[in-house]
Length: 74
Image (tube, rainbow, N blue to C red; front, side):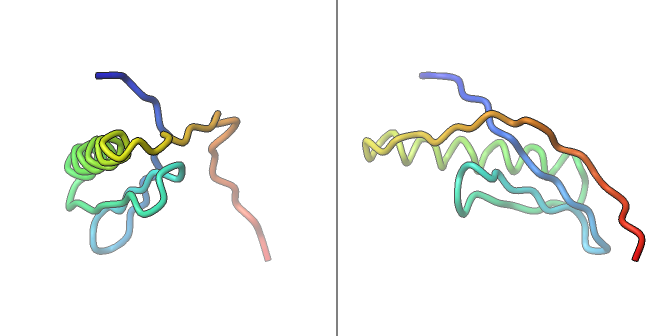
């Protein structure tokens, strides 16, 4: 079994945490805590990649150049 690196975006709102993997379309999850959402997205990515491998589909990858927050005054 191979090892892969993927970017994961985690957002927080009043309902908890939401995470998704930009490289894997449709790969997202949620959780009540940061730790829970990180475990959930790891499982979601693992299942998504396994399904792609089982179906002989390519595993998309990209190089993350930058991820940051930006405040914009309007």
